[in-house]
Image (cartoon, rainbow, N blue to C red; front, side, top):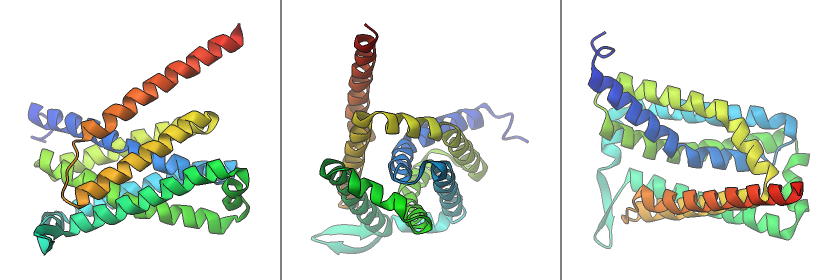
Length: 239
């Protein structure tokens, strides 16, 4: 009860909620890109399970705070650079995300046949996409939860912020996915965003931390410019 009447608790919760929403953008984009390869009737289910797995992963990580602390401790050194479990996960996840995003971009340039292929494979394609989402959820969740642990002292605050952030993401994920699917240029921008995120995760895993502002800033500016282009095109079409 004391937590609910403590202003510092609410400030910590709101700050952490905002941060979780921002850090969750790359996860939503990745889920939107992958579920866009499913038949239209399966996409909402794919988005739901993808975000549900993200929630379960983050809560599981929060339940093992002692492991999280150990995840940042060096296991061995490579060329005098200490390597931890977190570094290995971030490097592997960044490499996977980078390869996946480049493969998606290549598929779009090569033509629609490759892009449509997973839609014909039914349940196998759905399972494959959910597995890919689950693997990347581990990477995104690890980075997100370690940040949460550094910002809040109460486990209840961290759990509440994560649950609310995922719930809000579920509400808007459909609209975000639909917008990406309707605008090919936005989809290409989203894939470029994933390439940038993958590269930053690899760099982080190698010990070269890139501030989030340097990653999200250019993407936000590019998105703003593309939104202006879309509005300008609609205005020309009306005339």
